[in-house]
Length: 269
Image 1 (cartoon, rainbow, N blue to C red):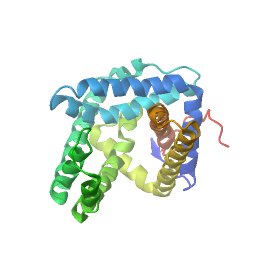
Image 2: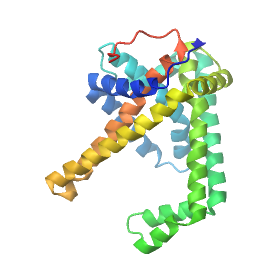
Image 3: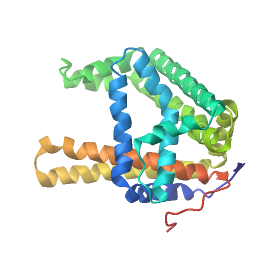
C-alpha cells in the first residue's frame, strides 16, 4: 500500500462519513460496541490478567470496527463474529496482532507509571475520592483539582496517550489488509499520521465538537424533561453513539491515507 496525502479539511469529512456509516446499521454497530463493553466488564473481574487482556485487545478492537464499517457499507449488518475475523488471516498476522497487543500494554503501563511519578499519586487519590460512597468533601476535591502536580500529571498522561495512539492508529489495518509485520505497520502508521497531520488535527477538533454538541443536546433534553433521575437513560446512549461513530471513522482515516483506496459508498457531500 502506498501512502497518500489528503487536504486538512478531509478530517471533517471522516467524521461525517462515520456518522453516515453508523446510520446505515445503527443497531448492529451499537450492539458490536456493547458486546465488547460487556466482555470488558467480565474480564475486569479477573485480577491483573483481565485488565491486561483488555488493554492488549484495543488495537484489535479498532480493526474489528473497521471491518464492521466495511460490512455496513456493503449493506450487511455486522455481527460479533467479526471479533474472530482478524485471527483467520494466518499465523503470521495472528503473531503480529499479539505483538501489537503486547507493545500496547507495555506502552500504556509505562505512561501510567511515569504519570504517577509526575503527579505523586494524586490522580489515584482523585479516583478514590470520586468513588461512590467516598468521604471527601467537594472542597477537598476542588483543592486537589487545582494542585499543579495533578494538572502536570494529567498533561503528561493524556499527551503521551495521544502520542502512543499514532503508531497504533493504522497498524492493525496494515497487518490485516497489507500483510505487514508489527514493526513495519507501526512505522508506516506513524509516517501516515504525520504526513496527514493537518487532516488529523481537523479530525480531532471535529470529533471534539461533535462530542460537545451531543453533550449540549443531552443536557437540553434533560432540561426539557425536567427529571434528572432519567439522565442515565440519555447520557449512556449518547456516549455509546459517540464511541461507535468514532470507531466507524477509523475505516475512512485508513483508506484515505493509503492506496489502493476502496471506492466510497458513503456520499461525499
